[in-house]
Picture 1 (tube, rainbow, N blue to C red):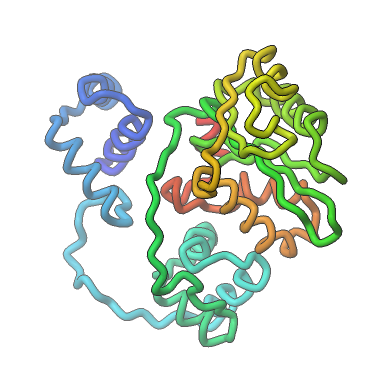
Picture 2: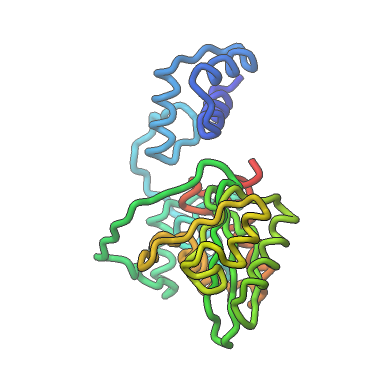
Amino acid sequence: MKREIIRRETIKLKIQGKTSKIIIESIKQRFDYTITRMTISRWMKRFNESDWDFRDTSQRPKVIHYKFKEEHKKEVVKCRKEEGFSSQKLRIKLREKNIFMSESTIKRIVKGNGLSNGNKMEGIKLKWVRFERDNPNSMWQIDGTELADATWLVLVEDDCSRYCVGAMIFDTLTTNNMKLLLEECIGMHGKPREILTDNGHEFGGIWKDSQFDKWCEQQGIIHIRASIHKPTTLGKMGALQQTYFREISYCNNDLGAWRYRYNCERPHESLRMLTPLVVYFV
């Protein structure tokens, strides 16, 4: 049995929240291989701090300068034009095509072909307290944003997996429209334990006995309101909306195609470059 398979399974169990005792017993039973708590900690540290492929450390020099084939460089340019992904995401997509490049190499190729947008956040320091639910369907977030044609895009996102549970475009933001979208999401994915919203009128404003609150109570869902003047509480929704505006053109302006791409094809930085689909249904 190759050691990298045992390491991969160990890391997978750890990410799923299994205890060291359960992991040790599982690896022993499945692979007849003994590991210790210290080994698990060492492997997790290496996994978190590097792009470890679970193999033994190579004896080759740490820095090797490769000359890439011209067709590989053209593939980088093609992917950038078609997908619009960052260098980090492009590295994952290129790896699926057996093209292995570092992010710095991809950045140089992208910049050299005039396809770089620059780093808009350079020099800007952000400060917030990050929160995240541990399991899918523990909490959904829902929010709307106005489009250029004065219609409203409303997105529903699972807080744990970043999976876009639902997406619709409405002429106006009303409580009935929010209920319509959420009922469709619940019919497909089951109901969440909690729903986080802003204080918009469609969610009852600051009143805790609104039509939306009563609907949540009937569904057995806890309605949580974001703090007033605290937009970072719904920061994940803001990021999802920006992803829509940035990448919808790569999907022929089709909302369904964009949602599929976001959930199933687009690697996510907060998910160790996995897709939301994998994390939501794992």
